[in-house]
Image 1 (tube, rainbow, N blue to C red):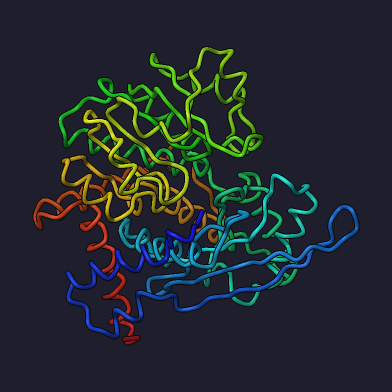
Image 2: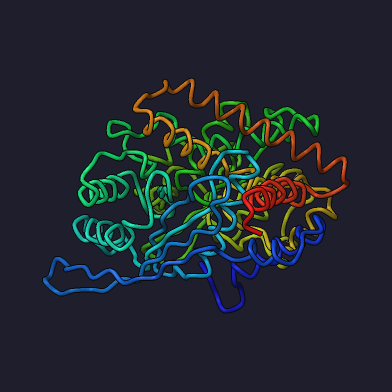
Length: 428
């Protein structure tokens, strides 16, 4: 997730500094927005199934809440770092800004590997995380959600612990809950569908029919799976997906030139999005090195896994056929690779726009939970389509008017909205 040579928070700050200069923000606003307003780091002791106690490190970062409560997921990952969480919190601020929802940016995490933990041990981590933060989060303060290797069950354990501590029912405290316990219909599909809503609009702008395109996807978790499903429904063909193999501790790409069968692959996939390599071979898939997802002869690349995947080196492997890169993941493209994509006239749909369907639908869930009134699935997805399409058109229009790349345009819109809110409140 984070290495010595790559610091996601430094990358996020660098992206912000560039936009702050373009917006001519004064020094106080720049200093205020390039750092989180609050950070929490704490320890979570959990009694394990064998009777021993293991101490886990937890985080919560609230980057900015000028436009509303902080909002952002909680990751469980063995390589989680405070700088990863800081970067993701900052990106969440801009993401909420670009789709114009009244929330700020936050992010949380725990250094752990759910692959090696029982359900009871994971429940202990969830409840311990909430106990450490119960005074600093809530439906009108900071609203968590699922992220990498966390699920609706984790959110429900956290909600239950929060309501026990507070002594009242507060389903708006957390989103990504099971539908029967205050979750929103459409939330599972939201991020992946949002990716394809923006891909659809990009293809319209380029004058290309979805049915004439192919795609390669990095990742096979929730985001990737639903992106593949909707992309297939609008006529596109996915020919390659890659994912992490827990048993071999490396990634593999699975290619079928005639197009993958999503339901077929789901039948041989574990709950973490790992595809069974041998069964995939039996079904006629070529098994390639995991990095080969990026070098496929396709029209669309969808990085939907982790950050720092399209780099100054790996961008050179991108085929001349590629027309669109849609960032389903957070921070998958480095600034150096950004420039190369722009130079090659590849249409980039930046992460803070492309994968904002998740936080948008989380906002819908929060609203429904606070009202105790729930919408039908078609209404949720219809509202999501409108939000994503409106945001895409605003970004595309500004990019053309200001002769900027799409990432700069998305940042200009988002940072300007947050800076104005901070100034209007009299904070800076």
